[in-house]
Each structure stands twice: as C-alpha cells, then as structure tokens.
Length: 474
Image (cartoon, rainbow, N blue to C red):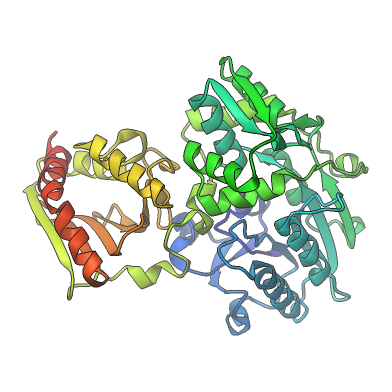
C-alpha cells in the first residue's frame, strides 16, 4: 500500500516509518522542511519525502493522490501560542479536506485518553481534533494513549532527571494522580498493525499498559530499575505555576512544555477496556519492562527519536531551518580561528561528538555557567543534551544549539543558538584545504546585543581557542 505519514520527524512518526517500509509499503513522509527528514530516506526506494505545511493548504498539493492510508500524528505540547487549540483545529480540518480528495480509505490518529469530565487544554484539543477528522470519505481509526514510556520520550526523560538527580523530593500533589503508562513499542504495534484493518474503520480505542500507577509509583519503580533508593514527600501547597517551575529547573524540559505537562498531569488518565489487544495481538509491557527496554536502547546508542529534537523543545526556532543555513556577513561580530588538521577522521569524530556528556572539550564549566544563566532567564540551558553521543542530523538538539547543517563528506557542521540572546548566533566547524576553520558569528539586536558581545568577548578568546586546539589535538 502507499501510506502517508504526517508528523514524520516527530517522536512516533520517526519510529513508525521503518516498520511500514519493512513491510514493503510505499511510505510518503510529509514534513514542513525537507532538511529535517532523515538523510537515509534518500537511499530508500520505498520512502518519499514531500514538503507540506498543514496550516498552508496550498502546500498539501505535494502529497500524492494515490495514497491508501494516512497517519495523522501532528500534535503540539507547546502552549507558546495562545490560540494553539485553533491552530490544531485548522491543521486537522486542512488535513481532512485534502485527504478527502485522495484515494485514502483509512486515516489512523494517535490521540490522548479523555475519559474525565475536566480535561486539560491539550487533552480537550486532542478530543476536538478527533471530531474534526471524522469523514464519510474514509474510515477513521483512533487510538487514545496516556503516558508513553520509551527512550527519548518526554515523560521518560523527565522522570529520569528527577530520579537520578534528587535522592529526596518534595513534590506537588499531582504525583498522586493515577495513569496507565504504555510502552512506545506497544504504541507502535497498535499503529502499525491497524493499517488496512477494515474492522477498525470508524472505531475508537483506548490503549494502555496493564497497570494503574500514580506518578509517584512510576518514579519509585523507575528508581528500583536503576538500583536507587528515593524518598518522595507530596505537598498540597504547590500551585500549577510553582510545579511548572519545579519541573523546569530540575529537569531538561522547557518551561512551556513543563507547564503543558503539569496541566495534563492533574487529570486522571484511565483507559476504557476493549478487545483491541486481542484483535491486534498486542500484549502490553509493564511499566518496569518498558523502562528496562528503554535503557537497553540507551546503552546501545540506538535511540531512534527524542522529544528533545522536536521543535517544541526549541528555544527560538519555529520555522523552516533552511532560513538559517546562510550565515549573515554584514552587521555581525565574528570570532574566527583556524588550525592545521593532523588527522581529519579523528577531528571529524570529535566535532560530531561535541556537547552533551562529552562537553565542549575546553572550559566546559564556563559553558555550564552559561547554561545556568540561560535557564534563569527562561531559556533551555544545557540539560537538553543530545540524542546520540556520536551522530548528528539536521534538526537535532545539541545542548542550547540546534543543528542546521551536518555533512561529514563536506566536513562541515553548522549550529544555531537557541539560548536567550539579544541577537542571533551561529557556530560553524569546517575542514578545508587541511585546515579546521571555526567561526562564531553573532548578529546583535540593538544596543543590548552589542553590549552583550563585548561583555563575553574576553571569555571567547580562550574558550574558542582552547576548543579548536583540542579538536585538532590527536
């Protein structure tokens, strides 16, 4: 079959595409920016990439008409826009209107469990999208999940941060809220096996794990898997805003995402039983099994996708990455250094491993201080890290940078700063004619931008000099 996957660069979409291609389906990946699509797709005969923005109906003409099935995996956990509900509604309506003009017989949507009367804004929006996608032109299959547990998922990484950093926690009362966590492997099984199943047309199913747990129990079971002893005291005095700040400062999440999560975590997420497990032959993992499986992937450096690489974790970027790929020359300050390269392969390995747990090779403590300052001013800080310790792709998050260009054959890596700045900043590494050329570019915004550049200039001298020396030192 020819299958359309929207949200193809997202956490679920990126993992679903290989499963469909392995079944020899022809997969069409809809992305807003082709630069963000997995570079390996270009080598796959069964995978096509098209640019389509579901807020811009004219761009949807790039999607072929002869598709058989479409997955709708477009979500927003960022409340940066006050009218995000209307944006999600517009996306869904534009999607439905276009899919109705194609040959598609089935649309599969991953939503959230919405069985409570008082829903968070984001869960209410999910429910509204379900209604927007209903159509007489195709069969709609809806799977509604709660907390998704897997390597790189936002819930997994936040719980990991809390458990591994805090031996004792004074936590908000929503930790006593009940939920039914589901392994990402099981989510993918439901989505994958539903393709082409006519008996699932116009049906809605809650999908969930075998246990009802509170968030507090999830934290404690996570600690057991990691062999850690943790103590948690819940208090009723933390307002949603204080809870959001608590998550923001302790974990790697952004404040906007923390606020959205706190809003949703106050709602009990218990699924309605059905026979979907038997229909699709899925036997969901327990929470501990899901955590153990996630750590297996982490230890093997085989994390396929991470919430950190999603644009909802972005500090500054919201639009297409290609707008930032041409580094400006005029009206900018630059710090340029070059060194002779002794071993090109070794230097490229170091460049591609920069940041995250590897640090920045020189003056890493100063980078950490800059990260703390960024966090204090509402930025993303350094805690976001990176998904893979050795691989980089366009769109990946790298501490408080975003990868704009990464090509080992061209021996070039370009990063764009997402920290809070009175201007814009780029950091480029390029090997050319046996020289490593390292360029930091800053385009100031107004007087404060210029004052900022001159205030950090003394530190640039030895930080960037030390870094480039380490990169060529074998």
